[in-house]
Amino acid sequence: MLTSRNAVRAAGAITGIVAADLILHRNPASSHHDPTVTNHETLAEILTSVKSIQKDLGIAGSTAGKVDPAGNFPYLTDKHKSLSCKALKANPELYTKYCNVKTPMGFTFDQAIQAGLDAPHLGVGIAAGEAAAYETYKDIMDIVIEGWHGYKPTDSHKSDMDYTKLSLTPEQAVKFDKYVISTRIRAGRSIDGLALPPATDRKQRRKVESLLSFALSSMSGPLAGKYYPLGGMTKEEEQQMIDDHFLFQKPDARNVLANCGAGRDWPDGRGIFHNKEKTFLVWVNEEDHMRCISMQNGGNVKEVFARWADAINSVEESLKKSGFGYAYNEHLGYITTCPSNVGTGLRASVMLKLPKLYKKIGVVALEELCDSMGLQARGSKGEHSPPGKHGEFDISNKGRVGASEVELVQRMIDGVDKLIAMEEAA
Image 1 (spheres, helix red, strand yellow):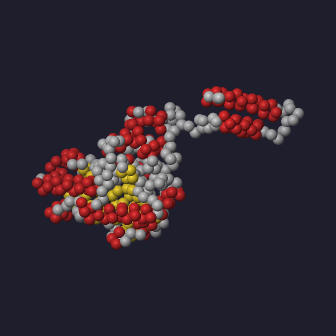
Image 2: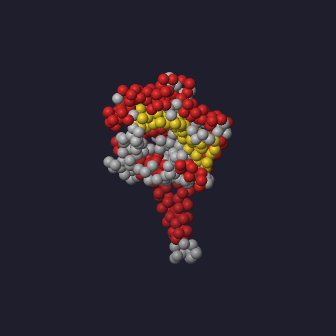
Image 3: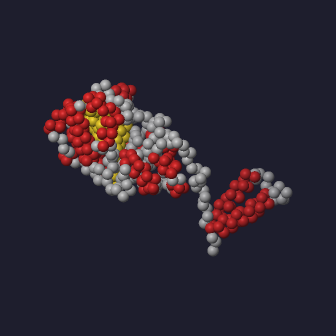
């Protein structure tokens, strides 16, 4: 019985015999030489014979398409700040382990880490091409998720979108309306069984759009609205989207969309839905299959969350009727393209006026204060920036996974209530 090594040696020897035999019979000195047969055809015949021998020996394709982990290891510098790049620099064996591993749908490890290589400033640097990527590349995904969320591989997630469980007293509601300019809750969702934007093809992307546009357009009551295909809007509709700040970002060299592969075939298969009151908005096939945003002026957090939850549940019911559902597991919760959004994927935020508190303690101290409450404070130009002209900051929950939607929104409510009290006492 041939061992693998002996099989390869045998194939090499037989290959030489076949080649010699064919070249001999193609030699111009032979009386049987056909002048119309070229060297190219001779080599092609040799290759065909060799492939046949390799197939018979069971060694065909043993190295074809394989990635050389040493020769193909990513070029990493101190400028590569993402958690995935740091993990690869600290543990190069991760690349050796995964460079020849694909997800069930064919998404490669090099595709997964490309965003962090091409955009060194990104914080996460790895993207999922399908839900299974979190399991296929588990070792590095666990490192990134724990580094970003402080969430361990042994932790479990829970979901709860029952908005009746939120606590906001009438007294708090009055103060919220006084100090909160606007409230916004958003989260991403993915359809189980379909590739995520970084790995999808045109057919699956259009399937996602078809399922979601139907589900969204079927909603009634306060959620009733219209779906606008990104490439099919009139100039007037597009301008209105711009005026309303509803258009999502286009792929460019600095954002995740372009660098993770989610921007291919732009704008095909993408679109925007909003209800008539423009208090509920959905982006389809941007970074995630679906990103739902509920928003309104003032501080009625319960109303904003209720609208968001009703829409999420309505879409899921429609998907189930078509044999689909949201991608979810007990460890990671709801699956999204970026590990930074797994779990609830939820960001609940208010634009909060804190002019006196900001003047008293400054940006850094305010950010640290919010961090101690599980919140994040952003100024008018993002993190570490001063507030808007009225002293307003964007205050949101910091975590995404390990706590339910209700818990995260309640955390934001409780934290904002404390900030308002400090503002009044400043």
